[in-house]
Length: 536
Image (cartoon, rainbow, N blue to C red; front, top):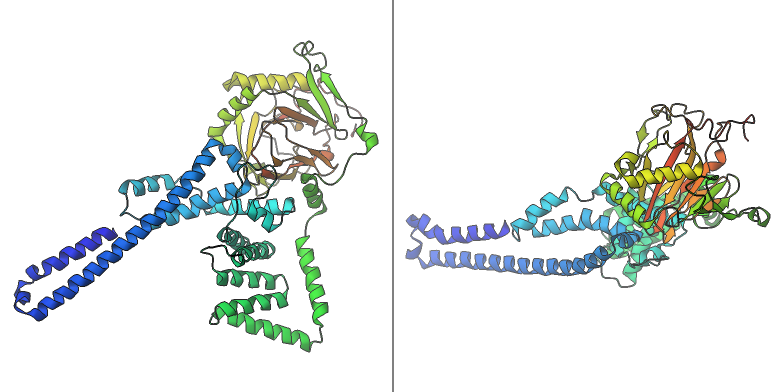
């Protein structure tokens, strides 16, 4: 567009003497000198255009070279590459923000084919919600796994295949997203990291003035007035005319003077503010603390005496004909509730088939709303899932039969096989698989009763994080490809076992694939008879 405008202007300048011949430009040197000046302006304008285009091409060339190397690495091992949460976040950021900036830079003049292709492809790009979601995932990983900002920014995570780092601009972006969520704790952490990297000499488009503006306000919101004043002074050293900073400084000084007038010692004030800040940082439910500790491999441990009661064995499915000659390997993971793991229970070929069937159907995983009984998305479940029926694939049918043989439960009333893939920071916070008494209609539409048991296949190894944890009892079950875990959600009496409350920890590094089968009460009347005792 700009190129066309320039040549339109050039053509107009050349045609002016003829279009307006009645002015007799050729009869006056004075008039002709005006044309010389016009042409000179056009040449200057043309040179500026050429210079701008050359600069633009140079920027685009550098971007293309950088992305060529990056995408070459990424496409060789997409799941391994995206298993690093920083890579996943930066992919969201590139496609949602940076490619848009490139589009604005290129406009129409460079390539009609590129622009039209970009327009078509852009509808499939991540949006602001995706970028924000990826940023929140990084913050969630930071909290769950006690990662400091420098460790996360430098990409020093366990088990990474493709090390990546966050630039000062990336850190600033994370801080801004936290700020828009009124999460001033993380705003402070990431703005300070951005500032630190700039102070260390990193070349970046991030502006220290903007960073300090966000940082000082975030610190003030957390009650640290003296630090907020110090940061504001630093901002004013860089930009003495900054209107908001000057106004904030006067306000901070007013508050400080007011505190002194009220005979509040700064030490007491700071101690109180520190306590309040600490309360904000630790404002979690006890379950939340236990959940995060278990995700890190900390927390409750089984006593040696209980540990001795756990065994591994060859299991034939209670003399099931299919497994008498070829029993499967089974080991106890926990005693109460009893959680058992089956080893080498699903082959790599079966896993790939299940994944290929599921991929085209993956959509945001849902949960049952206890108030409406309907399915809905939730911030505490971050994954995509798909449902597979036994009739559509012999592999799925074979898997269903295997579950029935080894659990002794009827799968004809079970839900379809659910396949789930957890993305960056993917998780499912503590929940029950069964419906409680206060939500009697949760599975009413199925007509098969409550969820009596859960069978969970692990279809991938996870480099770091991603454990299945049971906060009520302190159990942690770690993903291992080709294995499955099984537990009962209900006692034989039909009462819910509240100790089975569990969670899927955020995936720190890697890509987590699982599939699960929820078995229901109907059809199990003679396979698992009811007992007289409620909690037996």
